[in-house]
Amino acid sequence: MSDWKTTYKHFLTSATEDYRNNETLGDLLVQGELALAKVTVDVASSEISNIEREEELTLYFQMKQLLNILRAIYNDQFEMQPDKQHALVAAVLYFVSPFDAIPDDAPLGLFDDAQVIDYVHEQLASDIDRFHNEL
Image (cartoon, rainbow, N blue to C red; front, top):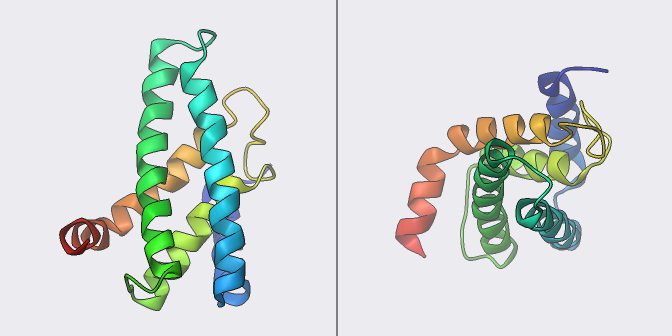
């Protein structure tokens, strides 16, 4: 099992090479929304602790922001520098993939996803602020 940073770099390469057209971005948006719906079900579950719920809520809101930005890019309503857009796409790819540093169906399976989303969310902070101010 590799660490999340190594696995994220793999997804970053894929984002740079494979996600250049709107068709693939549209497909990724659908996959992202479906994966986010699963987090919603987890948050509503009575089987998780309050600490897990808080972490998953943070993941949910950060991921929702990233998906909203990706949707705006898809609809030509927002632009980002290519390297930042690649980071955004890589984060979504990581989130939707069940095969990352910690498989999503394993205990704490979303822990690495949360680390990647938080990392990219911080990298894109100025773009996220700009997005909220422009739209």
